[in-house]
Length: 117
Image (cartoon, rainbow, N blue to C red):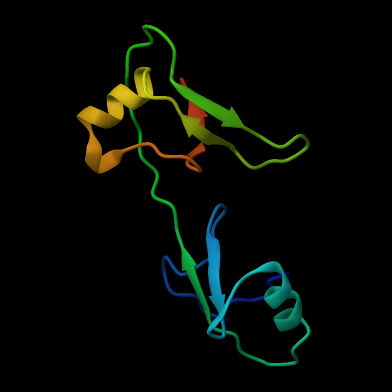
């Protein structure tokens, strides 16, 4: 779906951002088939509900394996994402100490040691 305009004077924090996920459009679940159907509608206004990821920074000493599998798509500007966590490793151990900020599958890795990507 191509988003041409959100509103003429968007409120602060109301713009779509990279990695936002569209959940519903006009009250319908936002899957590929519904988005194609909704894209063909000749309506002036659409209402979307989105979920926005929260960026968090974690610090840890690299002693051993991370305990995660990373995935990325070739020729894609999107960040790599965590595919799975093993039961042992730096990240699973970090999760045990920080349950409120746990790293989970599908989280995106925006930077690593200060390097983007």
